[in-house]
Length: 143
Image (tube, rainbow, N blue to C red):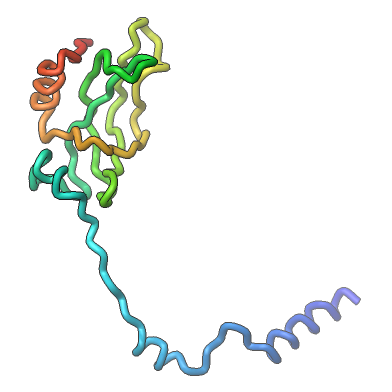
């Protein structure tokens, strides 16, 4: 009986070819690929600049906010642009950043390898630019 089941299964597969198309040349010839460019909106482009593209290493911000959604303090984080879409920029942290007020507390911050969707376009080419932005907003937190 055990030998009969594989034989029946094989026979059924031969009788019903399923997804195997006999006209693959026509399918391939008729295939159309429409490339979609990963572009983010023009307002962000004017804010960030033309340097931003997928694969670029840059600096993002890790900002602590209070319960009322008001920013309290922040630090820059070295990151890599993974993907650019119309609504956000997918980022990956390349370093650990801790902005917790308590020493040795790692609950508040970002870890190396962690990803996030940047939707406010607060990205900078250099660490100095990121720090200057945080200082201007009164959020920069030294070590």
